[in-house]
Image (tube, rainbow over all chains, first blue to last red; front, side, top):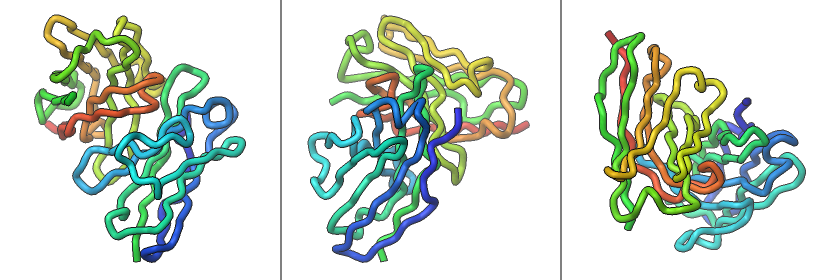
Amino acid sequence: QSALTQPASVSGSPGQSITISCTGTSSDVGDYNYVSWYQQHPGKAPKLMIYDVSKRPSGVSNRFSGSKSGNTASLTISGLQPEDEADYYCSSYTSSNTVVFGGGTKLTVL
Amino acid sequence: QLQLQESGPGLVKPSETLSLTCTVSGGSISSSSYYWGWIRQSPGKGLEWIGSIYYSGSTYYNPSLKSRVTISVDTSKNQFSLKLSSVTAADTAVYYCARGYIVATTIDYWGQGTLVTVSS
């Protein structure tokens, strides 16, 4: 299985909005509403930010939102804050009963 | 509060078998609906799903690692384990154990991670 495709890096200024894309295939992202997004700060374990494409776990800021169109899922962060600077990973369930991650996106808050 | 803790050797020789255990506290590993999984992250690289085990014992593996991976569960000890055979330097990574849903597509609890280095 191939990793989902994410941009290597994105950046934005405090207060702005950014969107990170996650492109898969019709055998994963396109066929299931089981896409999750994780935030990872250096040296830390990942943290779940979005699941089932657009659901937010309890305690996650409503500045984080998710969506999907076709084979591409997206994570949008609005009102960027310095603490949002981190690596972000998407994951998807696949038709082979497996899980595939994206390559990760480094978010820089300028 | 559920907690997961990885344990095992931090150094493994090439061609040998990497063995890690994840001890779950604050909840039962036999709880229905949950998958218990292993994810790794090579230095400076992204996350890679290794495999998951359902509370019933069904296993799911990354196709690229399937021939070398075994995940098992010991409900009496509230633990699950990872064995990765014939390791090479490419298997050097931080290994995370985790609890999740949908074969661990959604992971709500992670261990802190443990670095395993493959070197002679």
